[in-house]
Amino acid sequence: MRFPVIHIPFLPAAGMAVFPFIFIKLKHYKKDQLLLRHEKIHLIQQLELLILPFYLLYFFHYLLNLIIYKQHNKAYRNIVFEKEAYQREGEVEYLKKRKLWSWINYFNYCQV
Image 1 (tube, rainbow, N blue to C red):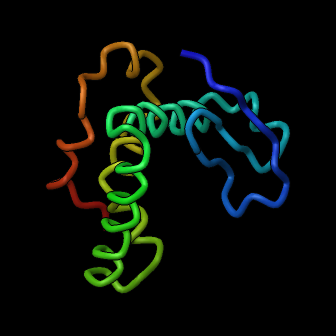
Image 2 (cartoon, rainbow, N blue to C red):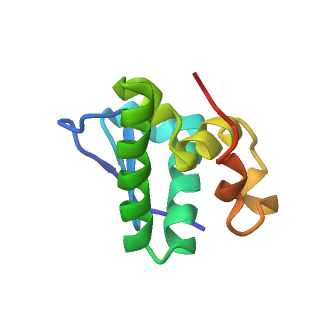
C-alpha cells in the first residue's frame, strides 16, 4: 500500500502519520526507509481502528502513561502503537506478514 509523503518543515517530529499521509520534517527523510516503515505501521493501525478511534486511544494512552511515568518521552514510548512501530520498524517484510490488530500484543511490553 502506498501513502503520499509530504514535506512539512515546521513539523514537531521527524515524521508523523495522519491518514492517508506521511508527513516528514526534512526532505531527505523521503529516503529513510526505517522512518517511513514506522509511519506506515501507524497508518495501518489507524485503518484497523477506522481512524478516529485510533487518535482517541492514542491520546488516552499517552495521558495514562504520563500519569504513570511522569515524563513525556517514557509516556510516548509506552503508547502501544509506538511500541509496535518502534519494535518492528526494522523488519522490511513486517507489514506483509503482520496480523490484524497486532498492536494489542504490546500492552504488556514496557519500554522504560
